[in-house]
Length: 186
Image (tube, rainbow, N blue to C red; front, side):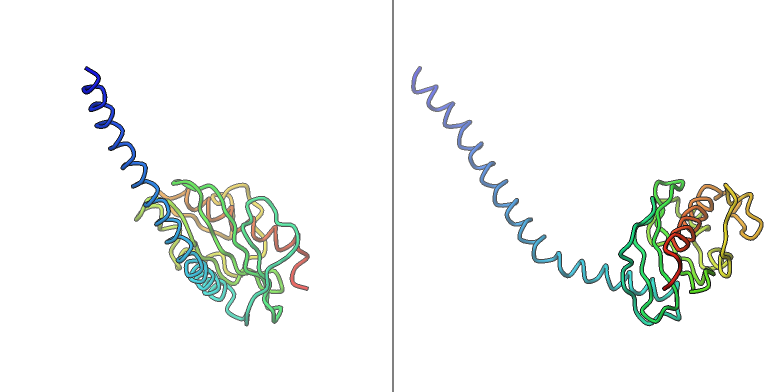
């Protein structure tokens, strides 16, 4: 009977030890991979963000981060070094969750461009509110005062994608407020 208990103990203990060792090896491998790839991922993310900033504010030469207070819903705010304006990234609620929008605003406070950098909305229908053609309707605006995109006179909304349209609208509205709260480009 004692021999049988030893055998059962051995049969259950050895696989457990092997499993723990496998978990440790995999954990260290993942940590090493993360450490090795993190700088490259950050470099690519920065390059993509810089490219988007240049698209929404084409007259900017390069950007410095704004060091003041950011309003609620504002992810980041960058001022162009040549004082052409600001590129402001904001987040708002949309149909599929959060929508991240980058808005370019020139030194006079007018929108120069809008792009959606991240979303989880329905492909096809919801994403109609994220096309270049649609987002161009914001160009030249300096104020968005309505509570909803449906009530805004200067901006259209996409029928069937009104929640997505409203998400973009509120993100752009937040960017304009941040621009004004920063005191514009100094």
